[in-house]
Length: 175
Image 1: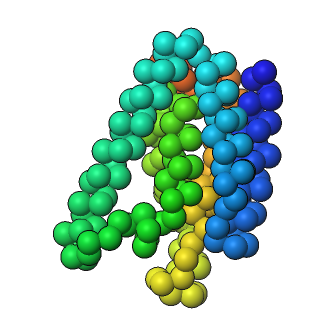
Image 2 (image 1 turned 180 degrees about the vertical axis):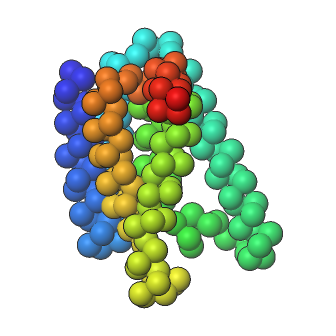
């Protein structure tokens, strides 16, 4: 069942990456499949109580980040609209929410930082070449990072819902 959840994640992620890159929009059915896959993957990999706490904490963390970004957007640009409607798509936000079902809170933060930095690096040539107003395929860039992260996770045999293994690996890399 774990392989089935991972398969749903991988296949839907590849299709969403293609759609986002090609059309700057994703299909709801593939986003729902990604949601289901991440839900199954996280639920099967962890005990139900741990998974529930991780999912709730990650959802609260994401809500806090969205609130802070929205507050900054309102103050900086003096806009009454939502930054999700003008700066990034709703599918991107739902993509982040789906990631919260797979990871522990610390792993979720590390993943968001890693994927954000990687998408900035990937988008720099596009922004320099086409300008700031060009819409970027965020899920496409972050999908590449997520695939790289899954490769690292399986290379080092890390449980995504367990922070102690991630801390041990980070300590091993630092020393």
